[in-house]
Amino acid sequence: MVNDDQVAEAKARIAAEVGRLHSRFIDMSHQLHGNPELAFEEYKAAELLTHELEEQGFDVQRGVAGLDTAFVATYGSGEPVVALLAEFDALPKIGHACGHNLIATWGVGAGIALRRALPDIRGTIKVIGTPGEEGGGGKVIMAKEGIFAGLDAAIMMHPRDVTYLDRGSLAVTPYEIEFFGKSAHASSAPEKGINALDALLQVFFSVNALRQAFRPHTRIHGVITNGGDAANVIPDYTSGSFLVRANDQAYLEELNQRFVDIVNAAALATGATVKITEGLSYKQRVCNTRLVELFGENLDALGVPHEVPAQDVGVGSSDIGDVSQLVPTIHPYLQICERGIGGHTPEFEQAAGSARADDLTATGATALAWTAADVLLRPDVRQELRETFREQLGRDPQR
Image (cartoon, rainbow, N blue to C red; front, side):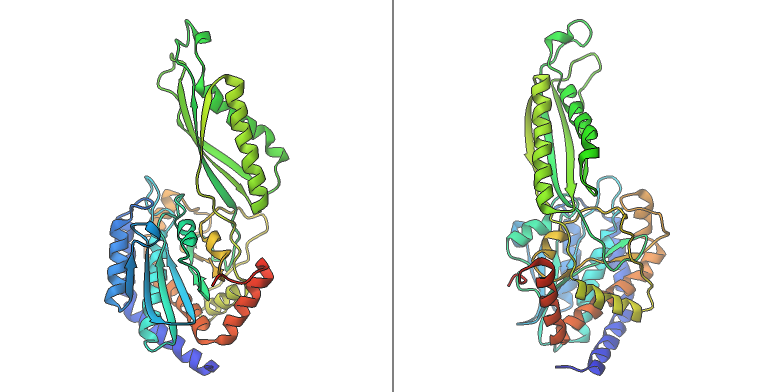
């Protein structure tokens, strides 16, 4: 077992390696930011990241879990095993407005710095590339294929407008809804048609009418993706995309059924027929509290202040939730912009490529690598993570 002085020495070497690599990290972040790619289409990003990892001595397996742009980069062998996770997909029209260029840079950068600082480490360092977080459920697919089994810890970090050590997430199920009716002249013979738009609107009306009956932290929201073609034609086809969210997996399943009932009722009421396509669900995130504490200690050592989110702070959903249900996981947040600049906005997209974000490529990589080093070097920490996982989830981590 290593002592505290040896851990501190290892962290000093990691920080030195990050300093040497900082300009490369900035370049990596800029290349990703300047070439945004949508879910499962991140071919340039995957090539950039895997090439960098191979250059730094990692053994890279591409196309894992049947996903072209997913990868697992490995250095070392045997136990313990720590993984740094990298997301790199962008959003339609507004690019890296969720800052995945930074998530990828932090994860890959931490893995590289860790390998260079600890070339003779006993155990395994993994950098896992997880495509399609923005609605594609890449980690859900990879989890089902066993990609995360056997990890002592899964570590990643997300940018935002405030630094948090931990924040929950909502379980979510996506739906694509299509209504099929019958076209007719909207003025001279509307009674001869079956209005597919009326059916779709009825879904929105019914959801809104029931909001008071939903539990707190429940969300059902959607958009119309096809509402018809002309105002003087009864629409014979409409479609919409919806997300159903809850902070409890069992309640999400109950809510899903309620939503499906609403959709079917809208079809019955209007005479339309309906096609319901359910997408991949994301589980709620349960971060390992001991691993969260370790990360906080490392942020403190770096002089980075952090806050505790208010109980009523809004949360979204992420496929990291499925990983957190399998192995000890963290998903903290690092402030890259002024408070109040929300994710998924043009302003946040600009922040993700800013000079401030460039500086933080080093901070984020160091904090993640230091936390990974704590897990790799300290058997007592690994035991605490397993015990905490059992306390939080009532079962052992997946081996």
